[in-house]
Image (cartoon, rainbow, N blue to C red; front, side, top):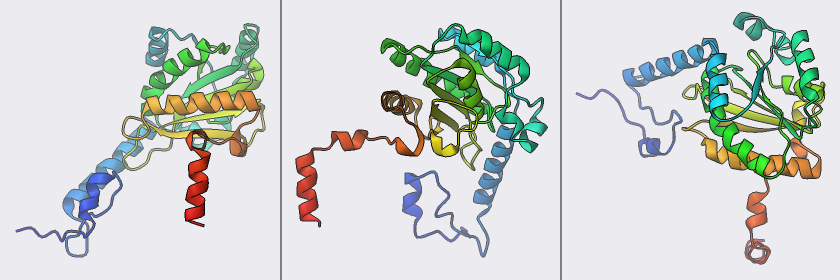
Length: 262
């Protein structure tokens, strides 16, 4: 006997990964849904705690033909990373000196960094984004710095990296805070004229990059468009938008649609 009362939205479940139309058993969630929630919660916690395999990422970057270097934030361990976000926004002194030496290879239009952030699993998607993006930009004449791998980094550490390298743009890929069902979500943040003290309003973000979210190929296309727009216009953040759909519209069609729907 089925003791689960179905939800009237059940037909919509196949259209989204969101937890809707779960049904009920009496006044509670059905057992299967409760267990699924518990599993998703455990995976999210594991993603935060899982160690970052730096050597594997370096090997993958090398296989993709991308030069790299390892930097360190002011954080020494995962517990401090979670307790002191401000430490994750700063480089260690040895890493600053390393960047001073690397800056001599410039000037650079773009510097890129990868960090585990709050999900080391998310870095599994970094190569699928950076490798094709690197090829596209290099074919257009971009000068790109060696990719920095930064364990225990926060988004704003891209400001200090970009400032020391003298790069026009700084791009940071790192694991986002895991959601219940998205423990491997990668975020890509970039800022024009990186300097310590930039605010979140100065950054653009392409979020939820993963096979079950925004596919890496789609993220590459978006980043390619936005980075070129940022370099051409000398801006980033709230003043820079993805205007590809607007540019593709036929102005005459838009005017006719507006007259029909004032």
